Length: 434
Image (cartoon, rainbow, N blue to C red):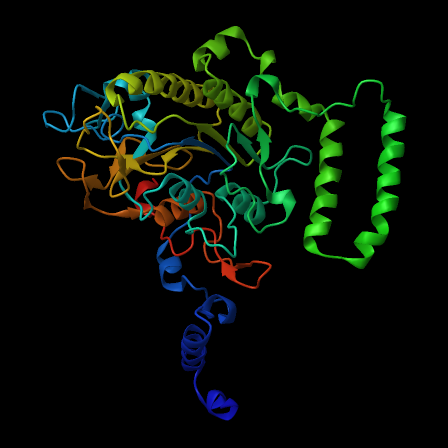
């Protein structure tokens, strides 16, 4: 067999080994055996040009529960499925959105709507996981969310601040998955209270604290020497970075109370809105990836009564964020994402609500490098299915990664020895970049 393989040309050998691996192991070896500068996405990569303005940071606004596309960013005026929600014109020629987004309408010339999103996951937990990781959940592996990939592949910009922060996220967030602890997001529950447990306990002096840390290192030394694994080192790195942050002036980045009353009012008083303000403060100081979670979009009943209030909070916070970033010169280097796990059904149920609908929904990208005032893809005339230019969840995540200049074909091995990439098999939508 070895002699036969040696007689084959390079691509023939790869093909035989890949097919054998797929047959015997159920996996492809292509990512692991490609060499000589080639890549698993070689052909696609040759066609892609680097974006003119690479995003240095991402603010990812996640609408947990499944946001109705028909009542937000893909209305169908004049149809029986639209219900009482009216549509309005925006600053982008020919682009209409829901009446609930009057403030955001003024910023649509800076944004792209992807109206042809499609997912294979229709249950909240699985769809949430899929949207964040590009992988369907499996029992043997927990996959990293996008923020952890950004940390792993792009590195940190700040020596003291974490590179990945999650504001208001629930327990269902994938976190760092199989990656080391230092790539996991730093969780912030309430943005108004800042970073909890970041100061010395009452009655403990710096000298006492340093002594305790020295003792802890001594206790841990024998264990770490016996088990020199990545996960063990990861925890040590995590503690070291936490202590460095505690002693840094950058800790003030988490204190939104120092912002002017005018700025805070621009975003709104809701916890999500204040989370968006905190996100701006963090990216301004070099944090790579900040996710702000906004739940409550699961409108199985009373959709048309509940949604206006939810949309009003998002509208004010989103418009405030875009305005604030623009005024500080940060919008050209910060990508703002609005995403949800799926949309809602065009058909209104007997409880005046809309049910889960992964067949088509809408996500938004704004800021760094994107072609403002542009709509990619379309749903059909009733918002039921994709009519043109279908975009998978993996494609959308690959688009974010592409906009940051991340290597889409970079293979990271899980502890179990399985190969993974940032957006699985997704292909970036290069069309949406100017």
